[in-house]
Amino acid sequence: MTKQEDLIEKYIQNRLSPTEEVLVHKILQNDINFERELTFHANLKKAIEKEDEDNFRNLISELESKANIESKPPRRSYIKWLVAASIILLLGLSYFSTFNQKASTNDLFASYFEPYRNVIQPLERGNEQQDQKSLAFLAYEKGEYEEAINLFTALYTTTKEPYYLFYKANALLKLEKANEALPLLLEHLKTNDTLKAKTTWYLALAYLKLNDRPNARITLEKVITDAKYKTTEAQKLLSAFN
Image (cartoon, rainbow, N blue to C red; front, side, top):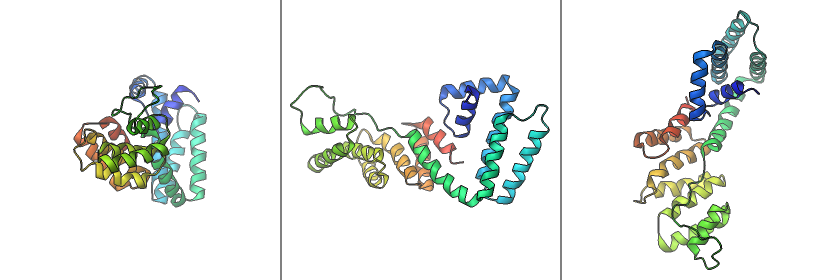
C-alpha cells in the first residue's frame, strides 16, 4: 500500500493524526488525482452505509459511470472498491449494516482507548517494602489489571478515595468489561475528585464499547462542551458517528 492509499484509508475511517490531516490538506491542494480518489472512496463509504437499498444501487451505478468516463482509466484501487461494494450488495445490505455497526464501535474503542496514566502514586522500583496502594498502582502500570482491580476494590472499601473508582474502571475497560466499568465511572462523576474532568471521556468510551451510540454521542458532546480533556479526540470520534 502506497503512502497516499494509506492516508485515504485512514481518512475514510476517521483515523488521521493531526500531522496526517495537514499532509492530506496539502496534497489535496496540489494533486487532482488524489482529490478524485479520496472523494471516490468517501462517497463509496457513504453508499455502503446507506440504509435504503435502492439508493445504494443507484449510487453504485453512478460511481461506476463516473469512473468509466474519466480521462484516465480507473485506478486499480477504484476497481477493488467497486468489486467489494458489489459483493456487499449481493450479501445483503441489512446484514452488512448490522455487522459494520458492531465492528465499527469496537474498532473506534480500540483506536481511542488508552488506560489513564498513574498520577496518584509515584513508584519506587526495587523497593521491596511497598504498601498496598503502591502494589495496586504497580500492578496497574505493569498491565496486571486483574490484580490491580482486586487491590483497588479493597483500597476503596477501606479509604473511600474516589480515584480508586476511576483507575478500577480504566482497568476494567482494558479488560473489555465495559459493563462493569460503567457504574464506577458514573459514581466517580458524583465526586469532587481531581480526576473527574477525565471521567466523562472514559464514560463515552464505555458507552461506545457497549455499542450504546445514543449515550456515547451525548457524552462526547459533553466532553466537547466542557473542553477540559480530550476535546479534539472527542470531536473526531463524534464525527465518526455521522
